[in-house]
Image (tube, rainbow, N blue to C red; front, side, top):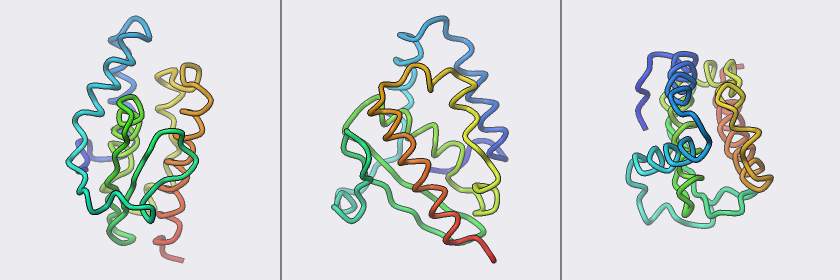
Length: 143
């Protein structure tokens, strides 16, 4: 997924602004589902155990490509809401340098009130997704 904002911080601010337009959580969940539908096509040949993200109740596959200067993440889930969570994480982190990824904590989660409205299993899955992104950036970051 290509970044739509110039920086991860700008992406987080844009996400917070977009979610502020919705008055209740049923509308926010619907928006999350709609965002998940915008994920780029995930090749079937990547849906393997090797690319499966563990720690999620839903099936999630994720692939990282790139180097320290630019890491791109491709991911998909069999769950509509989880696909929306993936979309938000990739919007913030995909297409960024390892250094920027490591310097950017996922503040958008608190900014939009997501942490309070996710089930424990979805929270664990989101934590696993963010840990995968951070670990990948750490492996690619210059010493």
